[in-house]
Length: 382
Ligand SMILES: *Cc1c(COP(=O)(O)O)cnc(C)c1O
Image (tube, rainbow, N blue to C red):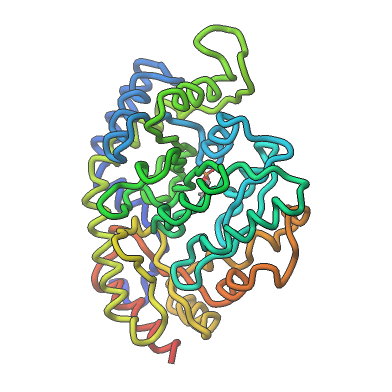
């Protein structure tokens, strides 16, 4: 008879480990789910308002409105400002498809803006040019800017707000990846007049299904968000405005409260993983740039290398799953063709797409696992 102990060198390393988190929180989460099943208030039950109060406090915002997803949060934010057909919303091209997809769902038109080659964040100078180009063309009305806090790092809100204000545009932050991050000590959720986030399971603060929320200090906007997420009603049966089935459900809110309690500790753990990667990889590949004064939520730890494909293959060989976010700029997606000037129009985005690679990043990575990833990347990079 033989006994086998797993060889640690060949234990797969996943990009994200929700199982370890569940084991840590199992008693708490199971009890909360049982409570919801017992009281039966599955839509806008008491756990939703409780979680909204907690996440508003955590994010330094007066109001949090729980909604059905990150994408719906963006659509609701645009509708609340009366943005729709004929309106231009400026979005970075280097992001997840839902950023520009939400603009299309709202009935408006995305205008793609290039990003900074170091930070991957919306480039304020290219934003200025895109606004001027759109105004000169005259077919769309510039209305809003939607910066993305890519991979967890807050966008350059000071510069973007200045450009937006000079053209009379509003700013809606796509913070789907960045809740838990901060800029100059101010948390994500308090950096823009309206912030949308996602609780998709693999985001830094994730539910066990779809969910999202809107954060704002503006009482009137918050009231509109609450109306739009319930069919455009104001607490009676009358539709007052355009709406949707857009609520965060009670079960997810109950789970999110349990996860939020350990989230600060998890953010510290993510930061420790990032620092270990920085120290081990900084001489071999480009490690993530940290704009002064920002703290990342480390949704992704994304390196850059001309040998990206070789590194990706070596990691796969070593049973380490790394992912390419994002392999193409949104302006090159088939579904956004009508809103794009095609290949060559966003050179930084196009160059990044060929060089980026996101390494495993979650709070439950062990030191030995991080060392294994570093070892493989170092060998493949040189
Ligand atoms: C995940 C994500 C979204 C969409 O969130 P969902 O909850 O999946 O709808 C939007 N923008 C960015 C940048 C994202 O990463």
